[in-house]
Length: 183
Image 1 (cartoon, rainbow, N blue to C red):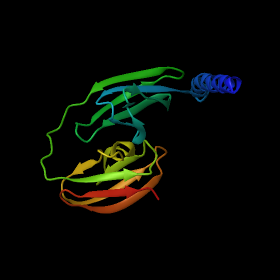
Image 2: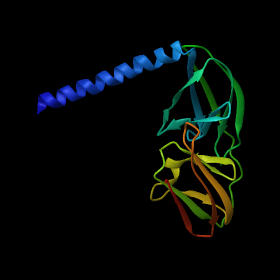
Image 3: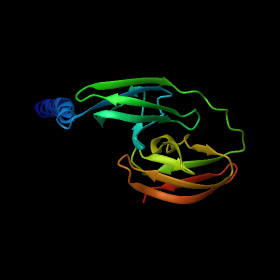
């Protein structure tokens, strides 16, 4: 039993080491580099040339994304903050780090209803009326949900690859919860 566990641990460490060495090598061979965004708040969505890559950080850990070498438009979006836009230069085989604190917007006023998501991939992007609101994992826990003023909304959920996972019209009512589930 102990030999089996030890073998499993060594196998897992080996796979992790292989991934860590092959991933940068693959980016170099593909002529790409990496982008690391240290944003406050960390849940800000990272968009490069209009494509959603994922959140800047998850549980305090900064994410690192493979990006083709060259100049790119970087946009950080978080619905409670002003959008940040800049141009970044990615060099082959190197990591470019951008640090930015987003400026808070005025806090919305009640009443609210709540939008919840369930069954989507963790970092699937959630858009309401065309605006990025966060990733699906932010809206699926028992005390989580996107607080919205009562009204009618167009909701779209996309994968990190850009595939549309769900597109639906919803009506939010005061003190009610609308739950969207992956198909």
